[in-house]
Amino acid sequence: MSEIWGYARCSTDETRQDIDRQKRELLKMGVPDERHVFFEYASGASKERKELVRLFETAKPGDTIAATEVSRLTRSTQHLCEILAEVQQKHLCIRIGSFTVDCRTEDIDAMTKGMLMMWAVFSEMERDIISERVKSGMRNAAAKGKQIGRPTTTADALPRDFWRTLKLYQQGTITVSDMAHMLNCSRTTVYKYMDVAGVRR
Image 1 (tube, rainbow, N blue to C red):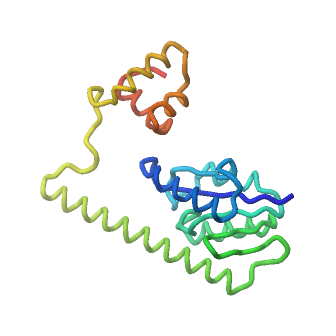
Image 2: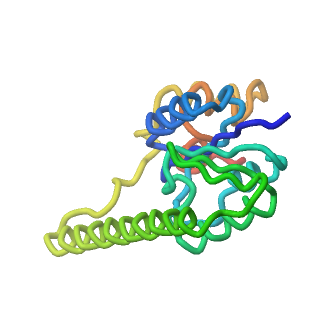
Image 3: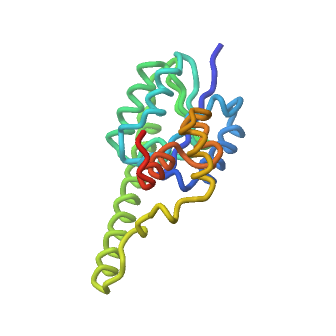
């Protein structure tokens, strides 16, 4: 029996609301439940995305992969070509918003493939434009003597709940994953807090 799998991505773990929005949209697109959604916080330009790799390892011939936008899958035309090649090789169907490319029984037609490539080109251009704007803003701020980036986190600035959960972790009562759940943050953030606090892992 074929299944529908969803993929959601945001650039950082601070856009949790956007991930939740993508999940809701994926459910409306036919993904049966959140257990069928692979999600992660990673750059769209990066190919090193564990959850996307896991998704393709999980999907079987005849299954469908869904994403809300092409930029969630990738912002690189080269990477999109690689994704489409894998979709064809594994005989999958890929659904991006209301656009469907079905490779379960036949190859992608030239017009459909061309449209996908155009989407990827525009996504890549958007990423480059945003990146240049950010760099320009940082240069202007530095020229005016302003601090660039986030202020350095100190032990005194760590959340109070972190210290409470840290004691439980050090006692062996909970794991790092439990801490992340209790603090409503990612494991990466918990490790960052530990480093700031000088805790040996």
